[in-house]
Amino acid sequence: MKKRIFFLYLIICLAATHLSVLAAEAPLTANELIDLQESCTLSLEFKHDDKFFEEESIELYRIASVSENFIYTLAPEFESTGVSLNGAVSKSEWTAIRTTLENYIATESILPVKVGFTDNKGIVKFDDLEPGMYFTSAICTTKDDIMYCFASVLTSLPNLKDGKPIYEVNVSAKSDKIETTDGKIKYKVSKLWKDTGLEVFRPKEIEVRIYKDKVLKETVVLNEDNNWFYTWNGDNDGSVWSVAEVDTTGMYFVTVEKRVNSFVIINRHESYISPGDSDSQEPPSGDNVPPSVDPDKPDKPDKPVGDEDIPPSTDTPTGDTANMTLYITVLCFTGAALIIVSVVGNKLYNREENE
Image (cartoon, rainbow, N blue to C red; front, side, top):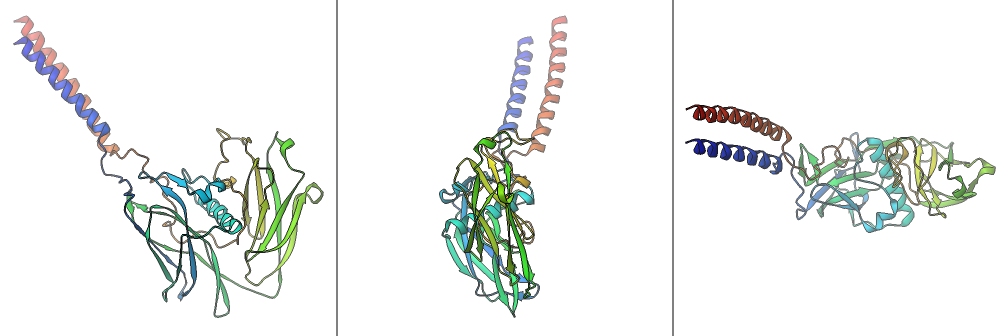
């Protein structure tokens, strides 16, 4: 009898332990993985107030592929940008990524994967898209003699909603109405170095190209003699200005920040570590902007309306799809059961010994 009770006690303990292991390893469905065989659809709306913009040519670029658990890998033609898509969370990070991609596309003449035209409701629809990260450049257009500019769009396909992949995504591009006049606007481009302790590698000068509506207007040189900045006047006619550095060293990550009518070209040495950085593999995102190569391309209105175009970050599953609440509950229950079984088994064992 004594052996039988002890054997039963062992079976219960083993079963409880096995249950806890299953609870820890079983992938539940609170967050679903991407079905990489599922095609995606992206619909973009170009509308300002009650005005619809039809017959606008929209170019779509596939920036990166994506794994089933939302890990992005840059497409070969965008590897040189150096942007980091994984881990970006804030709007400033995604805005910086969009700016870098837009500059790179214009400068390197990257071809789109698809081109579409908006309908009479200002909507363009792209079907049969592979899962991944997609981008459309900003555009400016005139309607009733008024200039309107629409922001670039960066979106993941599928998107996440309540932890589930959504394969049909709708995005409204943010729009701005541009007041044009016959006056002039003063623009400025300046250089910011992030290479403290590594100044020996800094070039004596850099060459900067200035573009108007993607057309090269002039090339200037920035150096210590002009305090690393240059100014020019542009017509206030709704034209879009952009700048691009010709990177000749290969040792610096080059990014461009747009601040109203001022452009800041940031050169960060590949070995530079700023306060708060844990390593030097790549510059941090956020206000420091992910690395880029040759930026160019119009400054456009900021983020598309809503958060639909913000690629998933904090809500993105990373391979562990277990329901943590259930997991912890089962573990607690299992632990309590083990204690009870242990106490009861010990009492039964001692009682039989006394008999």
